[in-house]
Every structure is written in structure tokens, then in C-alpha cells.
Image 1: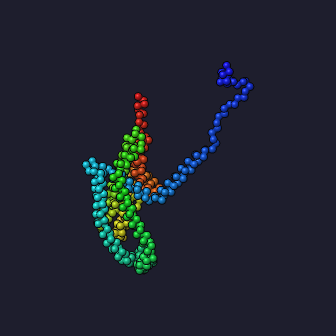
Image 2: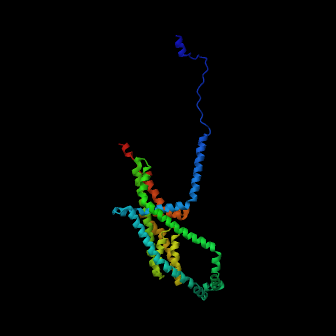
Length: 373
């Protein structure tokens, strides 16, 4: 009995105090570990943003090269279907592009150099002719002593060059930097084109097995859309080149074919391409006469309105399945947000967003139909 009493214990009496278990209050302030993690996350984000701002130019080159590689991938796949290995397909495409630009340079640069020299030699005679006119243009030229000022400017050119040597060096550095950027984009584009199938496999390997087929479909559809963007850009540039050649022939501007080819190539560049394509043609037209120059300017103004609001939206609607309004709005938003880079990447990004939204966010979840059966 004593053993049972010792082991069983004595039950509490009726007068024994009772201590009810109070609910634990949550801490009113996050623990220290929370603030440490938050601080580290903020610092890491700031470091990444600062590093990205320092290498923004390099990142831009990488993005441009990647977009070009993805845009040219449909052509590579077409050659692969004809039993051409991927390496040889990439080589053939770049050899064709290099041959085109070499032929373009041979046709354009020598006549353009001659035309610029002729323009420089003809400027004094143009000014003298303006001063002989009996209208408001001639009166303005005589009152402003335009001929005397031009002679003074020509006489001061050597002194100006000597004073602005640093500016000339800076301009030369800018030109060399642009050439280096083009070379870098070309090399990166080749590497991306060779590695795209491997990059696709790596991207899908990071997703769960049940979603890999859908992710692969999204990637393939995005590649097709970006390829459509590149082909659409080439189509608009080809139309620009043909229209410009015909217009310059009608206006009777010398060297209409190479000038039209230059306008088509420059049209590949968003925002500034139209101006770069128009400047040589306008200068050459001015050599022949002011009326030819004015007619050329009017043509380029009219064509830009036609391309921006009629031609390009229609072409991109078929190439990347975006409505004309979406094409115009995307280009305007991209250009306003990031300038040249934004205008270049606006349509590929918009097309990719549409693919992702359609194939993932708006698609019926897998297995939903099975649950109802």
C-alpha cells in the first residue's frame, strides 16, 4: 500500500490554487533575424542594381545579340531540315550577310565620297547664286553677308581643327567604339545561335517534369514570334529601299540605287534609322539643286508617315500576331522608357508576353477535365 501511495501521488485538494494556462501573445515586433534577412536582401538588391547600371552598355549588347540570334534561328532550323548541320547553317547565314554588306559598301561609299566633295566645291557657287536673286531669299543672303561669312569660315577651318583636336580624338574614339560594339554583337550572335538548342534544354530542365512540355512550347512559340519580328523588320526595310530607289529615280537624284539601298539598311535601326537614311540622299539632291533637295525631304517625310502608321503595323500584325494598335503603342512605350534599346526590344518583348499569357496564364490547367470525370 505504501508503495502504491508513493507512486500514485496525492491528488490536489479542493482548496489548492489553480493556475490557468494563458494564451501566448505573438511578439509585437519582428525578431532580429527578420530584420537581418530584410537588410541583406535590400543590400543585395542595391548591389545588383548598381552593378547593372555600370554594365548597362554591355548588357544592351548582349540583349541585342540574343534577339538577333533568336530572330535568325528560324532560318537556321530551315537549313537544318535540309540536312545542313547547325554550325554550317550559321556559317552560311553570316557569310551571306557579310557578302551583302560588303557589296553594299562597295556600291555606296565611293560615290558618296565623290558626292560630298562635289557638294563642298559647289557650296560657294550656291551662295553666290542666292545673293543674285531678287526675292526675300536673296535679300536675306545679301543682308547677312553670307558669302563673306562662308569665306571666313573656310579660312578658319585649319585653326578650328587645331583647337578642337580633343573633340576629333573623341569622335574617332566614338567611331572605333561603335565598330567594336558591332564586332562584339556579331561574335555574341554567333555563339548564341550555336547554343540556342542547349540553352532551351537547360531552361526546361529547371522546371518540374510535369510542366516541361508546356515550357518548351512557350519557348518555341516565343522564338517564332521574335523570328517573325526580325523578318518583319527586314520586310519593312526592303520596302523602304525599293520605294526610295523609285522615288529618287523619279526626282532624278544621282546615285539613286546606292542611296536607296542605304535608306533600306538604315531603316533597320529604330528611331534614328529614318534620319540616317535620309541625310545622304538629301545632300546629294541639294548638289543638283535646292528644288531637288526639297522634293527629297518631302518624300522622306511622307514615307515615314506611311511606314510608321500603315506599313509596319500591318506587317508586324501578320509576323508577330500583334494588332496595329498594339504595335504602335508598344513601340512608343519602349522608346519612351529606354530610347533606342526600348524601341528595338519593344515588339519582341510584347510578343513574348502575349505568348506567355496565352499559353500559361490563360490556358486551362492540366488535369482540370479529369477532375470532373
